[in-house]
Image (tube, rainbow, N blue to C red; front, side):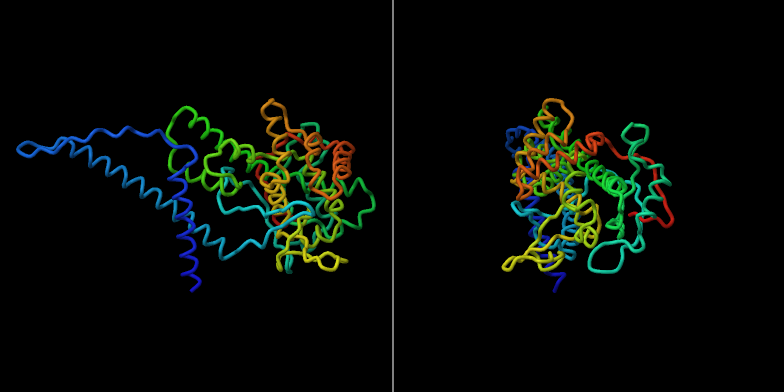
Length: 392
């Protein structure tokens, strides 16, 4: 029964996507003018149009086969999504949040990662991971913020599953900040790298379209998928490119620090919730203590920190509450100016009920900790391996 339902849903879902991209693919390829038909000979001789018609028929059959294969792939991914559904929509006090959708592949290649089992329980976490163990791991790979700031060393691709359980026990504020920033920075750079790779692909497709070149079927299908993922109407490639962009590390690091209490909040430690997203789903959340009567929200929990970062970036790139953020970011791009987290923080008024006070807090964190030094960085392409390390 489940298989039949999944098949029916996938068939209908894929049919709508393929129909949409064929009918309105976003960038229509140049049409080949149809040749005037010639009347068939009624007596004697051969039909010279026969071979051409056969070739055109063969090409059309090949295109249909290619689209069908691509469709089956998309349908398979959607089937997996149905078997492992995303839990509800997440929201902040004044703006809706939706968890990042990862049903479609990105152009970014796989990055070297380390693996570690999460602790048993409802949500992600680490078993036995302590601040001292994590600090030693960073030291083993010569990962120091000072050397990263100076440009003498790239950020290693160390992706921590969850924060150390003893983060609240750190007495020295500078030590807590150091551990927190070194944990969060690689995650933000990874997500930005994924988006940048997709943005580069989109830029090439737009350039080809402007030159009047035909857009291959595989790219048209990808555009349809990306338009749905970023909540953009088909054909609005300019708006899609405006949304498909990275978030300055300085802004993301400052907001993560403020929303998670520098990695010490119950939501961050139990549910990897770095950015305080709300959810109204009955599953996948942590109920706040002292929640007011009549409210039914909880704090969205994630299996790993990377999921929380992806959801945060996706929210800024898609929700109407952050339209101003996207407009200001696009303005910086058009001016050829590097993205600046402190400047873009001014568009985060609706992220918190505190409004302007929240913006001032975020800017203070950025300035005090010199987080602008991390804007524009990228991950090292050096392969990282570990036999028993506290990272994913």
